[in-house]
Each structure stands twice: as structure tokens, then as C-alpha cells.
Image (cartoon, chains in turn red, yellow):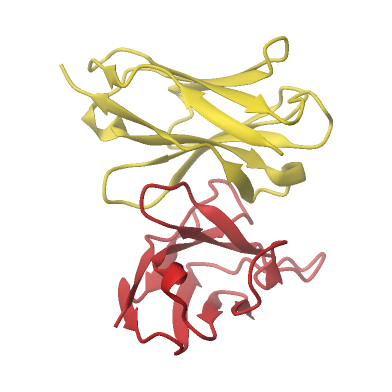
Length: 113
Length: 120
């Protein structure tokens, strides 16, 4: 199984500042056949289901604000929120879809400092 | 707009079978576009993918649960279902159904989720 490990477990950032969340996979999720990274990011607000933010490691889902961006390749990935807004308080998860089982990270809780 | 809604018992006894239904609106589950998934989240923990079923009924299961799970389609009701046998307290979780977008293996949208507690 591909194990997904996020860091940090929790993060407090001031409004308007940059937030960075890391995700590491235990093996590469980069496909040599299409040069794509099989990595997605989700946002889960309290009492709500997860919402897809990014897929293919860096492709923003339609309707997601452009302050959210994804980067990285192979085994190391980053979700960046360029200017934190109050509505971004949530738990963020990464997920690999390179191989079954499609595992998620343990989550990173983002709060306002 | 595609929407999903889980339904089923909120309490299941140990060793019994957990059965949940996901009702889909806004799209036909038999359209050759999307796949359909079950995902769960134990209290205070991250998500665990349970399994996925295609529009044609092909299933993909988490190996750690494969011997106990069954996912099926009911195209007449535009629903898909999950059965998990021989449950224990470790199966207590919020269970979500979700759309596997065009079989790409990321999930969006999700249902609101339903808490299933395994307890006698």
C-alpha cells in the first residue's frame, strides 16, 4: 500500500498570510506513461463532507479560488494557500489515486492565528 | 446538479451486516461517465476508501476489507449500495458515498455522510 503522510498535523496562520501543507507518499505516484502525478487535495470544513480542491497534483477544480495551488512531483507535494481567508479554516487531506487502495493522508488542521 | 444522499441504520450490532444505500440525483448511475464510491471516516481520523463500482457494475475494493464488502447498483432506483459483513467496533465511522469522477479515481461530490455506530 502507498502510505500518505501529511505535515504538519495542525497549522495556525494569520489572515492574509501564506499557508503551506505538505504531503509525502511512501512511493512515487508519478506515472511514466503520461507524466502525471496521481495526487488530489480536499478541504473538509466542520460538519461537511470533503470538497475536491485539486487533482493531478496541480490542476485546480472548477470554482476553487486561485489562492489555492498545488505543486510537487513523485513523492513530495505541497498545497499552498497564498493569502489565508477566514473561510479557509478546515482540515485538508491529500489522496493518492495511483494504486489501490486509494489512500488518504491523516489530515492537516488549519486555523487562524 | 449532481447530489448524493446516504441512508441506512445508524446502529448495527457486532457481527451483523452493515447496509447502506446512496441515492443519486442529477445524473443516471448507468450513464457511461461516472463511477460511484464508498468512503468512511472513523471518529477523529482520516478517510478510508472502501470501494468503487463502475456504471457497468465492475467493482474495485480495498484489499483490507475485500472479504467483507459488497457494492452493487440498482439502476431502477438510481441507487448504489454497500454491504459490510461481520462488523466490529472498528467499523464505527461516518460513511460517505461519492462520485468517482469519470473513473479518474478522485472524488467529487460527496454525500453529507451518515454515522454508523457498531455497538451491542
